[in-house]
Figure 1 (cartoon, rainbow, N blue to C red):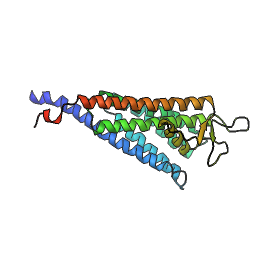
Figure 2: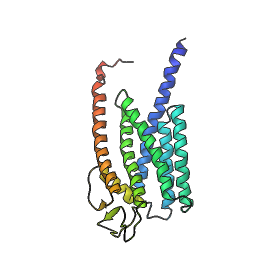
Figure 3: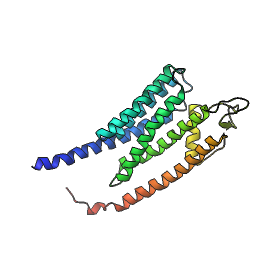
Figure 4: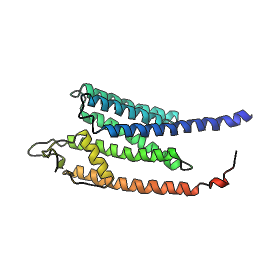
Amino acid sequence: MAELKHNPPARRMLRIGNFRSSVAQFLGALVLMLFAAPFVDEIKYGPAIDTALLTLVLVAGVLAVGRSHRTLVLALVLVVPAVLTRWGHHFWPDLLPLPFQSVAALAFIGFVEFQLLQFIFRAPRVNSEVLCAGISGYLLLGIIWMSAYRLTSLMNPVDPAHPGAFAFTVGMTAPHSLSQFEAYYFSFITLSTVGYGDITPLTNGARTLAMMEAMTGTIYMAVLISRLVALYTSQPPESSKPKD
């Protein structure tokens, strides 16, 4: 009877522990991909490396949120199209245009973001895993808006009558669609509300996305900090914890 009573909690702790360990790995994969983003466009096999790193992030995302059978199955259903369309666009760009890959990736990343927020708001205390989930969620916001900016840029063809969704004041100032790194750069600058002004949204759609991202970044940080403070202040002091 004692074993029957202790087994279910043990299984629950094992499942939660796997989730928390995977969050740290997921954060590491995100940081690696973001650090590599400025260089992949300048080396010979850059697109293949970028696709491999994105695949690593997507797989790590499945491990980070697959804490139950139902969530794991749903994560797999969403990640398979994202991975297949990404590699399909890499090998057959004319057959599978970039917007298909972006939409599939957005669906999965949005799902992971939701699961991370659930984990943060259901956590009973502040620890390293909750902090990793909070940082990962913030980085994912930048990646979500990056994909949205690229979609907006591709949907507004550059021609004399339509100069595109964005204007550029430094570097290559001629009208062009956002490159992947330019989309990363503009997204995180907007998310942090820095706004250097070297890339400016022109269309109503692009301006709306920039406005929404700036508000989302501010609200996310305010809510996350308030949640972490509430968890920390509700924790019992170390001296009052029972000793083993």
